[in-house]
Length: 399
Ligand SMILES: Cc1ncc(COP(=O)(O)O)c(C=O)c1O
Image (cartoon, rainbow, N blue to C red; front, side, top):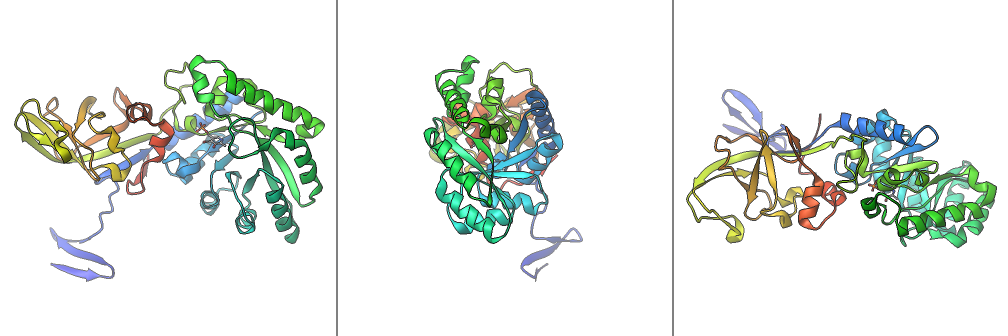
C-alpha cells in the first residue's frame, strides 16, 4: 500500500510504515571522518611549533572534503588557535555553527558588499592592495569600529599579494587609515612540498624566505607588532625558520604528509575513509567484458562485486582499473571503467564476500592503508585534489 504524505512517499513494509527516504547514511557509500584523528593531529602540530607560534588550521573547501564544521571544532579542541578559509561563505558557515575564534579569509574579497559581510561576521579579510584597504576603512568608519585585516605579500607565488617592494609604503598608508587594524602580514610558499623531497630548503623556498625576511626588515620596528606567517604544512615540517609567529596547516591536520616518504616521527593519523557497499555479487566466465567499453575482460572464471560508488561521488574515472579496495584486510582490484554511480571489483581471491558488505576504498582497513597519495600518483593529481573531490552525495559520517 502506498500513499502520498506531504512531499514524501510512505508505504507499509513488514507491518511498519517507512518513509520513502533512506535515512541511513551508510546504506550505499559514505565518507567516514575520524574527528579524534583531527584533534590528535592538531595537538601534534601545536606541540611541534611550540609556545611562541600560533597554529591556524586551514579548513577551506569544506575542510578538505571532511566537513568544515567537524574538522574546525576538532582542530580547535586539539589546540589550533585560529581557522583559515578560502571564501566568505566558508567563514559564515563556521560562524553560524557557533565558532568564535579568529577566521582569516585566504582568498580576495573584492567589493564593498563582500567586505561589509566579512566585517559583519567578524571575518578577517586578506588585503593585497590599497584599494581594498580603503573600502575596509570606510566600512569600519561607518560602523565606528576597527576592521582587523592581514596584508598578503607576494614573495614568489605570483598569485595574491602586493609586491615586496611596495610593502613599506602600503603599511604606512594603511596605518594612516584610522579604522583599520593591520594585525598580520603573510605570504604563501609555492614549492615547499616538492622541496621536502630533499628534506632541506631548496632554491624557491629559500628565495621566498629571504624575500619575506627582507620585507619585514624594511618595515623595521613595525614588523614586530604584526603577526608574521609564511608556512603551509610542508613549510611547517621542513624548517623552523619558516614558522615565524604562526603556521597555516591544511593537509597535515587531516593526517597526511605533503610528500609521501618524508621522514617524520610526528605520528599523524589520517582522518578520512571512503567506504561503499557491495550491491551485487556475480560469477562470470573467462573472457567476459566488464562495464562501459569493456575496458577489462576476465582472464579466468571470476567472481565480481558491484559496488555503489562512482565518479559522480568524486572518484576520478582516470583511476579505472588502477585502484584496489580493502575488505577484511584483503585487497581486491577494481576492474573495468569507473562509471557514474558504480564500479566493479574482482573478488575471485575473496569469494565469500556477500551483498551488503563494506569495502574500504580509501583509508585504513586493518593492516591496509590506501592513501590519497596512492590515488593521486595513479591519476596524475595531488592528494589535496583527491580529498576535495568527494561530493556531497556521499554523506559525511563522523566517528
Ligand atoms: C594561503 C594558504 N595557506 C595555507 C594553506 C595550507 O596548505 P597545506 O594544505 O599544504 O598545508 C593553503 C592551502 O592551499 C593556502 O592557500
